[in-house]
Length: 376
Image 1: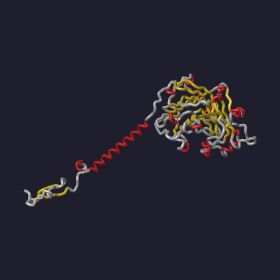
Image 2 (image 1 turned 90 degrees about the vertical axis):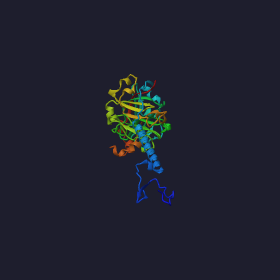
Image 3 (image 1 turned 180 degrees about the vertical axis):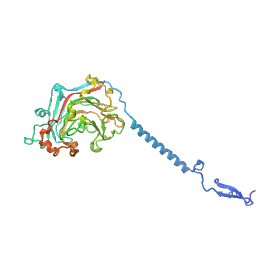
Image 4 (image 1 turned 135 degrees about the vertical axis):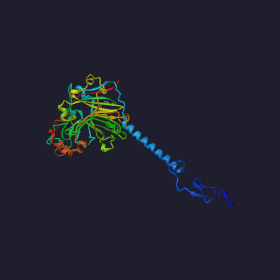
């Protein structure tokens, strides 16, 4: 029964109150808490928080998935049939190169000479089976002119340029000496680093640190991805603005450059440059694949590469193009200066180069043929 003074508004109880009878009267007791685990009691703010939380978790899971997928991604190096297009060899080896002269871009203590002077000083010469590139050893401290502003050396740049291909370099002797910085590489000197740089053989001083194979690019090329190689990776960023232009290098074993390699008769370096990536192999003189000997190369059968630069996070077509083959022997320079204190070499680099021509008798390249293959 309703009391005489019943008021509808007075007896409209909140849904969360509890009603029970006491001494014939209806008593209202407010619920002090609501079960958090029951969605029927959640407010709009709680639902909104749940939606945001689920979205954040989904984004994190997706990001982790993308990262893991990229880490595990690997390009398709399906076998390509190659045909021989260019051969650099024989007595005409140097006819296919321009001789760079002028200021050394790497701040080396050298004077790169033109072909007539290189021939006069016997710094470049070729036979039917070999080509020699040397550092001058004739100019001493008493000579006029002397080498007080740099020693004579050679830098060759092929007249032909390339956008891809399979490159075979027969290397019979690598240069080594305190202060030497020899390299066999590919780049577009007029558009560096926009058109990239591919270092095939590079070392400093006595070469005991092994051969270093490196890419240098502009921004947007990283090797922090899955790779298959026997060499030891160094920096992951190929960007010339990162790590003082160290590039993304891979170091081969100690016997891959210098006197140790030379006493074994040198070897063959193979570089496959294609959209899937850039890979490099080093073959000992006694272990050159028969398909290379027969000029029907098949990189798919060569096993794990010494250096692998996949295209997973680096578009090869965007970063490498119009490259010439370059051979040089720099002296001193930025790479040598950076590690001179640990080199074990006496004096300082420039004094050594200027005053000790006898030390550079081992600073020469000896090559067999260079061969460039293109897909059929």
